[in-house]
Length: 309
Image (cartoon, rainbow, N blue to C red):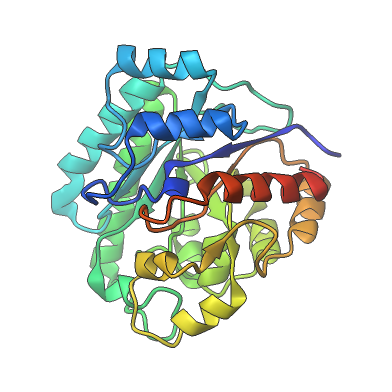
């Protein structure tokens, strides 16, 4: 059964990942071009990029007929000393997006959008080992348990104060990346507290098969990200000692349909299992490589239409 799916986008398609990067486009340019590209929704982007001003953002979204489908915690989830900062971000993000116009609910959608997507980031030892399960250090038990408690605290605050669903996103270069870590976090975080946002590109980058992984964790998948990987560039960057976003700057992420991911198989799986709701397409890049953004988004959308999205 094909339930309705709305394709949305995210500021990372414009190179917005590190808010301290001096080359980022103005946030209103991202909204303008998201509307121009035909999207009705997008993610908020990393904390500190879009202003957390309800009146300002409401007006900016409404005049472009856009809604926000997710906010993002993209920070150090491991350090227990970072919990106050993580909860402050959670409070501020949820206070904003829970008061914006809500995206439409679709048949097959488990939880209403917007979501709070939670990703670990900020560890050099894992950033340089992104994609390399064999050489990436794993957290010891005490550190892992501290990370789990941070995630539980974020998800509890989002749920109990704002009625928002937290979705854990395995991310290349963080401490929740590989198959063993995904399995462990699913076992340690109860389903009534947080779900998953699985990302096709990050799964492939980290050595997981998207179709098999989506099927395995289907009862926890609340939200999905789509991206694609250039197989030739991927092979090249896997032979280097390189940070994840530096690999993205080299073009490892490409328009959907031009890479190695079998989206016909993904479409068949989502149809079989009855997924409905939102899928956000992403293509991380260097923000200075801005000339082809709209062309790339158009190519991704066109391809996804061809395979039934």
